[in-house]
Image (cartoon, helix red, strand yellow):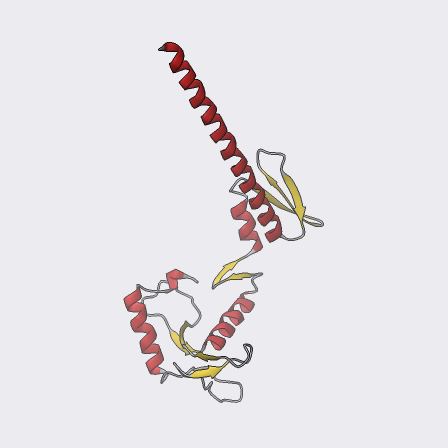
Length: 187
């Protein structure tokens, strides 16, 4: 989710309520045949995917275009969750982004690798996938996807950190023992 697209909470609540009221508390999506979507706020529907379990519809105040995320008076449209998601996906397709979704935040493989390569892990694309290595060590490997390479490298880095902490604790215990012995000799 792009938090910059949302004014402070009280103002945002006012804007989304006004959007829903203007729409008559009904989704404003219009199908190609000219018929308006029938979803209404607080309507109880039965899920087609979850064994007909009932759910309550909550309409969204969706940003149109998202051209200026900091706009204090954004152009909003009242949409049901299904049509809000469809609108967001169409925008992404128009922008032709190679995307991985995490909520509403777009993460490209290039951005993922750019960030991970600044964190002590090097991940590089090769002919049969992605090679990874933990900088300053001999720990390295290959995976078929960038996400898998990052995941394994982070796991290995965590294991290395755990081993380092255990070694540090052992060294501290040995140091304390030597200091106690030294104190006993000087008494």
